[in-house]
Amino acid sequence: MRTALTIGSLQISPPLILAPMAGISDLPFRLLAREQGAPLCFTEMISAEGLKRNGKNTLVLLRSSSRDRPLGIQLFGGDPASLADAARMVEQDCDLIDINMGCPVKKVVSGGAGSSLLRTPLKVAEIIRSVRKATSRPLTIKIRTGWNSTEQSFLEIGRIAEQEGCDAITLHPRTRAQMFSDHAEWEKIKELKNAVTLPVIGSGDIFSSQDVMDMFSQTGCDGVMIARGAMGNPWIFREALQRIGGKTPSAPGKEERHVTAVSHLEQLCELYGEYTAVAEMRKHLSWYVKGLAGAARFRSQVNTIGEKQQLLQKITEFFTLVEND
Image 1 (cartoon, rainbow, N blue to C red):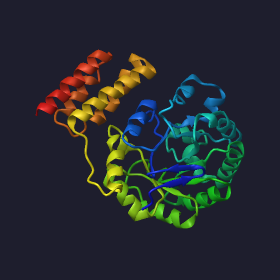
Image 2 (cartoon, rainbow, N blue to C red):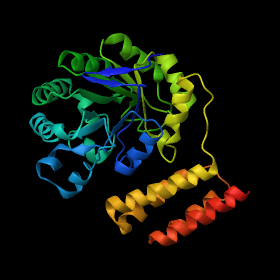
Image 3 (tube, rainbow, N blue to C red):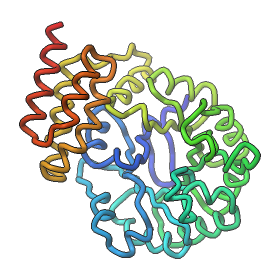
Image 4 (cartoon, rainbow, N blue to C red):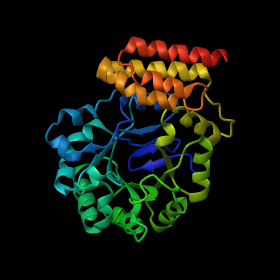
């Protein structure tokens, strides 16, 4: 297993990455992951067209801090010129630029972006070529295996990425048609690794530190990207680091979950203000309490709360009861 990942001028050690996740991987979420050892984190995916229009909602996604480095920015769009312009606009705000070619969401796909690009290899080549000329930052793409089971283009796209100057490629081994159903076909990551000389980053169905180790050993990938497995669980990075170092992973205790949840809420309030922060935190709380006694009742209670102090009180009450039990 590799202990470091080289992406252009970047050295990522250990080779673990927090994935770009829409509505999830904002600045507070990234900082919590970094506290637990995540060496490279991505913003939520950012619209190239939104950047060009200076859209308020788009610019919020670029918020960062000096503690949030190295940082990857993921762009999405279907127009090569717009993506190139967007890359120029953000290159001073990040250490790496990624182009999303895997998002399966209908709104993104219908605009000619995301996984719809897997059906147009020539356009993929034009996009990578245009963005490569626009920026000197390390450049990567994130893809799925294809549109559906009969249209699997990941090997062709991988070769194009290599020819057009990408520095690495991330593969989530599901098709667009699968969305997030079924199991990720990790053997496809191994296929891609054998087909290109670029570093290959594996993604998909990483929910524990053991999954991280298994992906490395089963696929030979150069790095592992963690997405849903980090939701409510930033400790997955710490535990993976411990396994990589030959140590027994230390799971978070109930008190640590409590402290982290409160810290997350405070950081959200600082970034967004109380109203938006409380609404955002409610979904994160459902992940922080997963598997704990009384979690279902707690989720039901907090889903109607709109004030910070009331939410803090409920969080404290819940974890105090759990800790006493």
